[in-house]
Length: 302
Image (tube, rainbow, N blue to C red; front, side, top):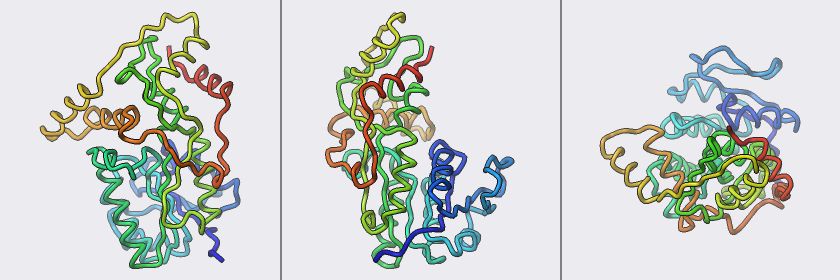
């Protein structure tokens, strides 16, 4: 029988995933310790949640903070995806942690084309590092692949730009991609930690829906018929060519890396639609048509 994972160290609790995941973990009766950067601004963590200030550049500091923890769930942002996460892995090994969930929560990096995109290099590096550690130490891992966040991606004009009723349809917008709400992501992480043997040393993939930009446009027209929708078709090749040029100049920022993510989401060759799903294992229900419409209507921007 697998050893239960009860004590959970959460890293990145104030981020997009972390702030939804923390209450879900607490509601599921996990004992949560939040690791936060010592230089962070005043904490927004709820009263009663154990919080430890650590030096994320120090394996010793991290190891001390992880003493007694069964699992580490990392939801760190892009700036900490590489070297700092590897230090966190080293600390988890040193502290005897049983399970590590790195900050994935996105595209399927088992797809070789997606894995080669520059934006995902730190995630791929950490994944390979975890696989090596799992072979040589008792530490295990789970990669959580969610597709782009549905509600967040609509709200921030990423998976579908609604601002000004001028959506950009990448290569026509017909590629179907898996996408998950942030609540579903939190539910999936809780399920992974609750089913350690079934999710050991593997990736789990799930979705709240499989949809295309073209379908989102039709839904937007239905739920906001008063707006003058005028979509524009944009070529992914043009976007990634410009990104390649910026990368060659040493410009490592959002403007450089966003086109690669858009490629992974909107180019069928990159596996944006998950063909094998773990929804049943994780207890994730897919959204109904009416639920999708309600979220689109709520998240549309002016």
